[in-house]
Length: 514
Ligand SMILES: *[C@@H]1O[C@H](CO)[C@@H](O)[C@H](O)[C@H]1NC(C)=O
Ligand SMILES: *[C@@H]1O[C@H](CO)[C@@H](O)[C@H](O)[C@H]1NC(C)=O
Ligand SMILES: *[C@@H]1O[C@H](CO)[C@@H](O)[C@H](O)[C@H]1NC(C)=O
Ligand SMILES: *[C@@H]1O[C@H](CO)[C@@H](O)[C@H](O)[C@H]1NC(C)=O
Ligand SMILES: *[C@@H]1O[C@H](CO)[C@@H](O)[C@H](O)[C@H]1NC(C)=O
Image (cartoon, rainbow, N blue to C red):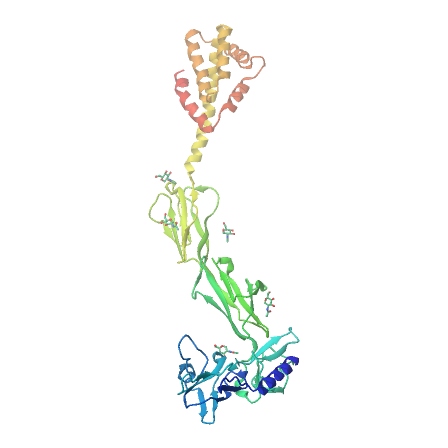
């Protein structure tokens, strides 16, 4: 209020001053020297002049005086074309009228006259300053107690009366430039100055028509860069934007707080970014939220794996079904089955059944899952076919082994009987040889088998009773161990069943010869 009063006083003061800056009869008088004018209105610059003698040949208004000898005549400036009127007459009046003022017209305007006398040129200083202002509504205050102020960039010359509009309907007329009432962010407010109702301010209102756009448009594919933009119709412009996100119908959570940028950028969008998004735009008048948009991130197959049914041992002649599972969006539409080291695909479809399995079906199987966006091969699943005959054979071999071992033991008995007739040192040597030898079982067995062979040539066959007693002495060294224990002692040395099998095989001829 005080400022406005001061402004008015200043204007009155300026108006009252009669500027006569004449020299030797030259003078230009501007009234007033400064006029704050509304954009779009008409400014009238009053001006009068005197000159010492001669005849006036040229008069002009100008704002710029560059390096040239004469300043640029406003009347010939295309910027003012059709907007300026001179009122020049012989009564030494030099009034200027500029219509439809623009903010770019803000300048200092000066008048110049030339006469036919030598040195008869004069420009009146300081000219008229003409600030051009638009009206604007400034919003201050918090959520509940907002105040609107109708502001200008210069002080309007005559005490203006302000008019307020709500949704384009006049609601208030007052000399105060303030408006404070219940303000809804859904309404729009503007102000004007009485007498210039057509030159009202732009309306202020909270954000409306808020929406989210996705760029690039079209399908959203994992790994790409995606930008969400929140756009809103708002005045003053949207200051802050908050993004909200929810997944699978859960609760919305804000993913950014008070973003001043209206964008949310995914540098590399992930499948986990799939969900619903909306933005909330805010300006000084209020907030508005957009509709939710659905972001559906498409991706090629992931985590491709093969499962087998039934699980467990696969026996020749049985059937199994392999199933390919994978995660993809959109769902997978193509499956191809491969077997390692076989170039052509084995089958297609999510499941692959192998009926009446034969041993040639053994191998590593994998599937390739595709959904048009990408494909992925599963890790391979090994299929081992256990033949039925094989198990029977194993049993048979087992029996044979037992029988052969018994035979060997018998031959061993005979051998020991023979050794008994030889020196004790010989026996010890053999025993040391057996114990110190870490080579496979068949070596030991053959060693035993060989002993009777050599013994056979050296000695005659003794009674079984004696033979038996010798075994006791030989194998136990210091302990008494029955025959079956001897067999057991040999067993732990055997590393694998296969080895046992091989050992018997190798020894079989010698045993048979004997
Ligand atoms: C929102 O925008 C649309 C299209 O630009 C327009 O037709 C509609 O009138 C606007 N609604 C509001 C409330 O401004
Ligand atoms: C926008 O955010 C900034 C920073 O968080 C905050 O200071 C400002 O008040 C916010 N503007 C509006 C209109 O809420
Ligand atoms: C897919 O694999 C990733 C990483 O190996 C894992 O984090 C994710 O849980 C898997 N997804 C599914 C559906 O198995
Ligand atoms: C496939 O072939 C490679 C080389 O030809 C061979 O080393 C590999 O053992 C084979 N794999 C199978 C499962 O037959
Ligand atoms: C899957 O395996 C097949 C056959 O070896 C091959 O042609 C294809 O390129 C593989 N796909 C992928 C994604 O590695």
